[in-house]
Length: 431
Ligand code: ACO
Image 1: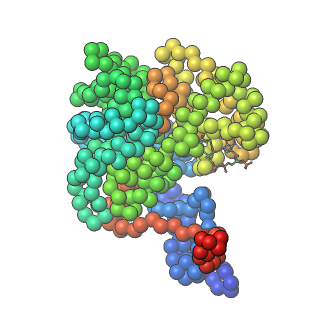
Image 2 (image 1 turned 45 degrees about the horizontal axis):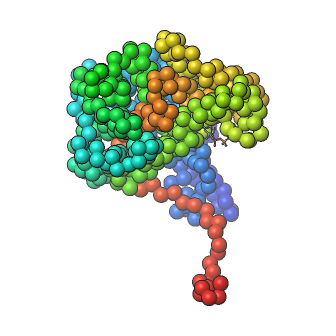
Image 3 (image 1 turned 90 degrees about the vertical axis):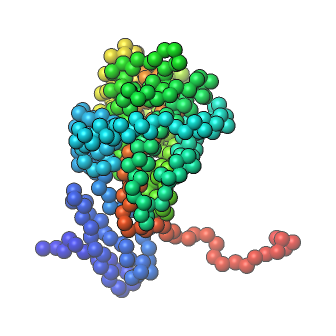
């Protein structure tokens, strides 16, 4: 029987035994924690494609099979039966809440929906056309200034305020987002209502005006819940890994989440949902049905945004759910969006083209989410902000795993230095 608990590595005539860690789903990892100490050699894995940086109990993904589970529950079941607030509880606390726990969590979110009045002045000091992701990052970080009792270093104690800090962050991001939207358009700020649920309250703060309450159609509230729920966590993606990295230094929840917002912004990550719509609009404006664009993508002249994923080498299960929900939403609202036709055509062409098939490039969650958000009147530059609102429970859960583990250890990768070897300083007149 081969030894599955140890791997061995040979280098310069010496053998190093590496313990093997096995996850609950059978994933195996060579544990190299002591490798450098024993051998003087480090491992190299640019982009971390083969590196497990931590153990985590939050989310399981099998990218080859297209499986995604939060705390063991398949994403398909959560999408069908749960809603964002319940799923947020699950992601953060590791279990489905009882009715009492769910009501208590919802009440806590309601209680913390409003933001400190003086934060309004912060918004006013930003340019009207500031990108909402820049504002979100700044405002989430600023929460540490306005709620300092929740911005503590938990590495060595003070775990009592976690529930309040988590609820403050998850609840206030939607208020911040709606406020940023209203102020960018010169519209009066709308305050949250205690009687409304999470998504309805967000849409109320976005679209009501002082004299006319926005009545949220149930289909829109369901779609918003679904979008946020599908984004709630995705294990060690770029932004979550960033949040964990920042948390490992002992930084507070708000600072760590703000770093997640910044990492999410880029078009290779959360910014892809905005990039997808801009790509579809450009294709539409060119009178192309997608064929020309695909041909250029194959030549490396552009990228098919919303396609491909570092982990999924199969259909992203979230894209399957969101693609179907997108059709249903547009149909129920009676919207005919030419961008949906182009997206469907791009998907069909790509999935039948060896360039995409051989590289295992499939639609990811961002491919259809933007078309849904457009149908809900969410402006394109706010798509990534909605992704951030949805991802907040995941960041909170991962921050908690790092900051409250009881085993504080700063994340600090190494590098292979490829710069100049030692050289002596040259006085300026001799250069
Ligand atoms: N369009 C065209 N070609 C692509 C695409 C794409 N969307 N994605 C990857 N490729 C090609 C690459 O050019 C490369 O080809 P090559 O082997 O001939 O050089 C090959 O597929 C592998 O690509 P990598 O960039 O090495 O894959 P990686 O795992 O590093 O990148 C990523 C994954 C960033 C998601 C990439 O697929 C991409 O840029 N997609 C578009 C942006 C996007 O949708 N991002 C959202 C991701 S999901 C999320 O964060 C929520």
